[in-house]
Length: 54
Image (spheres, helix red, strand yellow):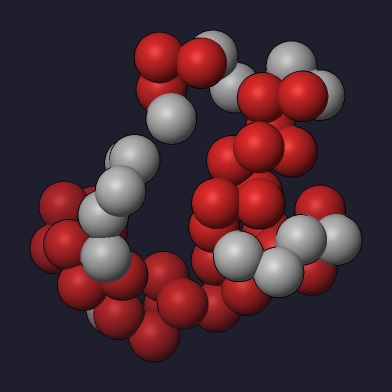
């Protein structure tokens, strides 16, 4: 869900904003990144995401 806020993601997936925030935090922790942009770069560099998804 490229470029979306936690609230936008929560609305699209029928989750709470807090749940989305927790998942984002877990992704950042597990990838050793400090921002969504860094996580997207990590995903691209490690072939975890297609470039057109970011």
